[in-house]
Image 1 (cartoon, rainbow, N blue to C red):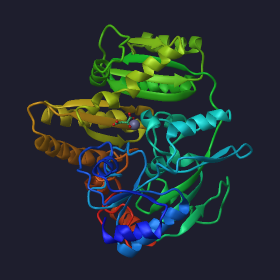
Image 2: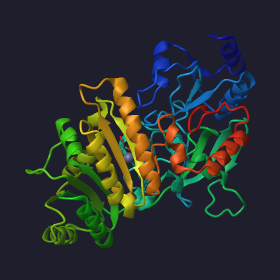
Image 3: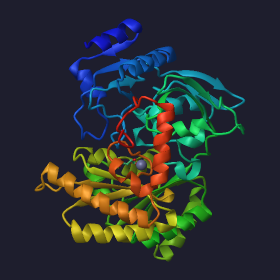
Length: 457
Ligand code: MLT
Ligand code: ZN
């Protein structure tokens, strides 16, 4: 143990501190698996006081802090590869309170998203942000990245559901932001600065989450589609006639991988695109939409789930994609454009990918109803790891230019972290980045909070 760590242990005698190699390895990485973890130590505070104590110590010794949730992030935002102190919230994972009138749930940052869902359900309500990593990710990380997911089309991102936050800034102050108020017209809403700040301004130590009524029992339908313009027209039709909870797409390559990983393909013939959609209307109304789309040649096949088990099987075709690709450690992009621009953007990307990189196994899927597309690229067997990353970075650079031309964003919901840092300037102006740096200096004067993430120190 270094002298400064020994001092931290003396200063906070009840703080759990770990330095075993297995812990450093486990807590020093996220799902990106691209960097070799090398943190100084792992601190597992049990209280807000301990978090403040850690930040004071880190400022005194100029030790960098990496805030750590479930580390399911895909942009390297929770990687600790340069002797940082990882602050894990695994021990601060409780529900602290429920308010039936305000319909809010107050939680510690280390609670898993799924546990938040269960707690809300226990009160007859719903916390609507949802995505595949729900069992492992933590609410603090969801807030730090403004996590999106499969129900943004209806409920918005994490930001919309944050009624209040307690944060410890990089300077060590404890701030109580918005305190669950619905209306609060008192100047800058600092709460929203912390949502999506990727742990660069401070640490979220408590969150008050807004809850809502759960929807009525929903139906789930899967479509097979012949072309992207047909998909966009089906989206228009569904949005007009159905109250959508989700509208997600994937390609034949995604279907190939997810089926190879154990999911059931309900179709006999292949199609280039598929959509899974969930909505409030009953089967008769859904069938009317489906038949209209079939007669117009917009879809070629479809299935409406007849049971919860079948609905789960249809959802698995979409939600299982990330897991089915994990063993290949694909190169990931997570972009957004305005919904209306999706077909043009895809055309431009198709030209780039098929002409220049015909060997790449490119798997497109995502939240097309939000204009958010995931592009996962699987390495061809004959290309080395280093060449593959280099080629993917070249594609990303060119894609960033295409996105810029289409008014899009290089990160829709995964964040910038380390992975997309070189491309931040394609989505944010120089003036914006300068202001963001200025904000960091205000909240984190010694630059100890997650340095090197989002932008270079
Ligand atoms: C998803 O929506 O499944 C993930 O955000 C995408 C990914 O794993 O690239
Ligand atoms: Zn996603």
